[in-house]
Length: 191
Image (cartoon, rainbow, N blue to C red; front, side, top):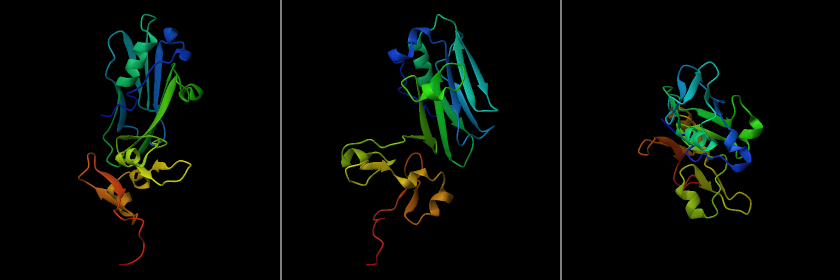
């Protein structure tokens, strides 16, 4: 299982004291019958409702549960899949009982992409080459605008797709196994 929102918090702008529900949905890439969301920090004080038909999880509770407790619940949500394709999934959460894209784009929610069961940020936001290269999902390209970008090979969901790109190799020695750039991939000439 993967916890896609481990750093979830309840920002003061979200009216944390009045929150009584959290909504999470697996959007792009959802595989019905194979993907699921569960709540690790949920107790009898909350109601958990998993809707397999649309890949959504709603956790709701009475007024006795604070927004900070709901932030803890979001941080404990786990994604699991029995699918072997390893494809990309986009997960979104927000306070409330339905999907609220506007709230999810603020401190009152969030979106994350998973590739092969590992979280991938939309942007590799590192200021130095060393930090960028230390992240297996990022690639240092230099320049003044976005010098650190998502490494293209890690977006291939499985070994079959990875092998189609001559600049990539499937690394089974990493945990989890993933598609990575071949060493010296930028050199196209002959020696």
